[in-house]
Length: 537
Image (tube, rainbow, N blue to C red; front, side):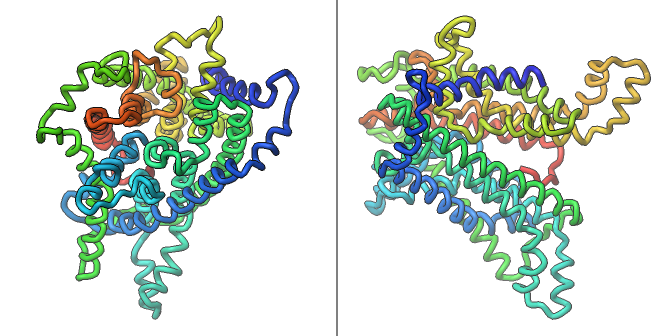
């Protein structure tokens, strides 16, 4: 635990605490009155209210759209199911900046709906809600669908034999078993949308601001650290409560999974109703997931003189606006280098943490487990700005170093590594390690000979997730990426922030490249899955 604890203490706790300290103790004396002062401001109350409202609305809409898809993937068997399962998961590993860009190409200025019907949704909250559904669709399908596929349909059939209607049998038998998984999925979606930044930054503009976007505005634009510190504490408290509730529902879900048979029950659809349901789900996937991505690709090729590679060629040269100090195309190489370094750091830190959680128990370890999840809920903007004000003097003067970006990205990748490797490590029979020790193997050799062969694929999957997440990290990177070394998400945001058809087209081209890289990473993950019948996301 020593190295992971030191890593989180230096690169997570220290920057966040420093931001709060500078905001609430600017002259050495604590000013807790700033909390009441900030939270009583009408504009801040509006931000908090909209943040909670849009998260609730996004969660409800996601469940409404995705639950039929969870049923179809759990109960139906049809051609191309495996490929479609990978396709609906692509949005979840895409950077939020790219998600916002895709919907901007669909419903924004000069987007598909604007050209066909003169309808623009980027000036309304519907664009944000639909983008959140697009991003979180796979969370519900994987979490709920995985459990649904393990429920024995004969239980419902027995209820119907005893006289219950189809709906009554579903309500009294299947629904109670699904409640823990639905609750867990809803809480995860709420957490992701409550801390939404990239989507709101691109689609919301100045009209709609979430808590995360407001923290960015207060720090980057207004340099109002006291207000940013208060908002960070509010977000930390809210996310902490959400994670505690999520942990409780996960325990309930694990209990439910032990009570039901794990066999698969998928079969071909029967009857007009089931075929109609399958068709409706396929149509919703096409409209909600494939169409935004398709429009994004189409816009990247649609130049002023017709379709071509003009925008892609323009990525290799500088324009006169001074948006970049280097050609935007260099952001591809920067992102790949940063993501590879961040993946290596995340695998080492996350692997050690997972091993520690496997070998020990108690309150200290449970607290350590919770610590590992905090970077997913604490403002990435706060972490990024905290890097700038803490890691600027010896012995850790890293502001001019390239490693600063991978360190920030690794903070987000570590939880994915831990959650991927921990179940596999816990499944390793302790007697195998004991037998190796009896035969004279050192602890290191026992791990190399026993654990590593069993967890190798899980380790590769964890590395793939860490790579995809690092590639798309935006909230912290936007602060610390050097002007001459932008990442792909930062470059896309810069291009979208400037007027002009060329900047817009280049943003679409860069987003398409980023989407292809993320999709390839996901497809490799699907091929490396050690248990294709697992319902875990």
